Image (tube, rainbow, N blue to C red):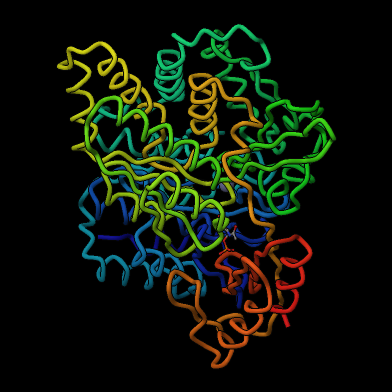
Length: 527
Ligand code: NG1
Ligand code: ZN
């Protein structure tokens, strides 16, 4: 049974400020770090229950990704490295919001409702980003785990996708890889080196990439990884956290939303650059052209490059596995058109938030998913993976065999648990080398439609509800008709609104034939 007195005693060391209400949203709990101590303790408790219920290792990641340095957050990672199941998101919200004296009872209720066998062992793995508050907050998670007598391993400083990887490895008895940082670096670098070893590219600039690390954890982990891949790729780090502030005027989120270069990075024309976000689960590429104009290569163009590479490989292998590309409503209209009409791959749209994309991508032999903001990966079904590994041994035709081997390495290089900036970067670098593509050539696959995103503060953002993967408004009545009327006034236009899952705002998105028109449509929709 649960020792409720002991839990009450432990909990008193992590008291909840009364009246504070938080929600387990798309990205777990996220707010000012000073409000989170009790949440961390309670998520430690909850992770133990989830671990007992699933008889698996559960992950707890302390990070607020691209948010300002003063914020922090926490996310639970489910057994296969996936986001926490929705019914448990509700449990998390209830537990975090229970007033101090009610907390042990709420904890009991969850354990009864979810039919948790309290006799079962529990094992939790914990990771954190580089925020100044993260170490202490992860200690509070550990206190929660210990209060319920769970076992744990603290990985300390890791990227979010590295923690997802650890959870996945531990729950698949080491088949996916070894659950250590060393194991992660070895798995990825081996695949990368094998994939690129036959490229005969002598020009140095092709093989070096500049990385804006958002002054976050990505810098530390790329430094650790550097020597594993240095034979094939030189990585130049900027915004490595030694000078600047986390996510301040740099990083993937800044670059994508402001559509301009990060500060703190020397960019010469036509040099290949990329930006990670604060916990290294997002990546976007960018460069300056000879006229000094900034070009952003976002998640949509990343998905396009990867899909076309995979399609060519499958053609060469001569195996018919199905590919599906999963996007959200924020995907640039040009990317969707290019994928469907030029590349002839089926494209699906889901609600915002990687759990929706990840889930949809699992329906295909090869599921490519990316949010426009650069969060994504490629999933391979077990059957597809087995088939490809088998072909690398059975095929006799040398060309087909080589293509199968390449695909096998691509499988190993993609993080199957979560979108991963380091892993995605290595895949992209490998593809560019193999296809001998410059960043400009990649960029020229299609032209993005000019677009604009705006945030609108409203009294209650929940009055807006949507359907059709958030592309159509249901309530309030009349709003969708008003948007339709505005959209009709512009060429190549599209617009939608939805309540944010991570901020107290309504997001407006518009695209049109010119930047001026996209701006003006977005503004018109905002009113
Ligand atoms: P919200 O705030 O629900 O729009 C944002 C991003 C998502 C996702 C989550 C989680 C946009 C438009 N939205 O969600 O793509 O990354 O944060 O971090 O970029
Ligand atoms: Zn992130």
